[in-house]
Image (cartoon, rainbow, N blue to C red; front, side, top):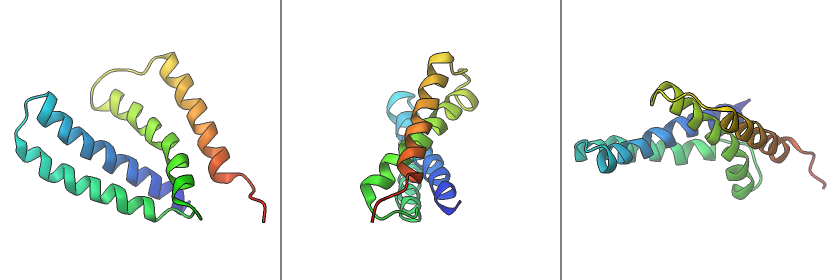
Length: 108
């Protein structure tokens, strides 16, 4: 469960940090949006180190499914655009893949 919590924290921090840059560069918000965005991205990077895994690449790959899910939640709750059936199908496949990567038995 610590890994899932780390992934959720990382996803929220990454999306918020990237959105700060999006707001500045694409939505015409103040450059001051960048400072909390950078801090959020630091939290994102730190959160990924809390995941239990023997390899960074495997951690990042498994995290991808959580990130995609969180991105669609952001799309719906923050941007007000409801995900369509293709979004939901894609996220289901990504979560299946992330689960396989994260929970598959590893040979010794």
